[in-house]
Length: 126
Image (tube, rainbow, N blue to C red; front, side, top):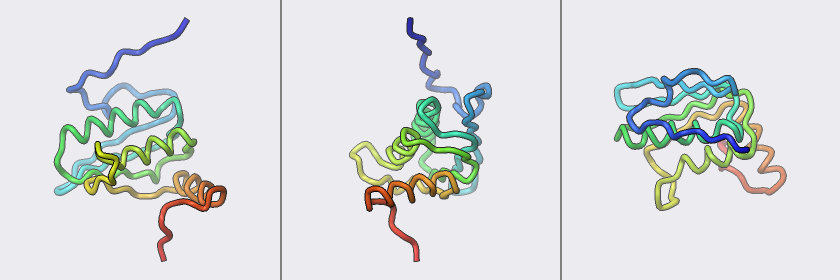
């Protein structure tokens, strides 16, 4: 037996739905020229659909810059990292210039781990 969930209604702000006990908290802040999506808790396999739904909702609802703040994350697994990276791209697969992000410790640990294993990673800031 498999459990299924119905998709979120297209008009509902995914950051205001009831809190999930799995560990991802989404916070939405509107600024003058940007919308900030704050992430807290865990960005892992179980929470990827909720994160991607929030990003999709924001892309459809605003033309402003979207800032994804990852400083509140405690844990990011590989599925969460891949979803995060995918969320930075537009439909053609190119980097979406409207999406900016703030690197928190949990995201940095994954980026550094991938760089150590593969030699590939985000550009180093000097």
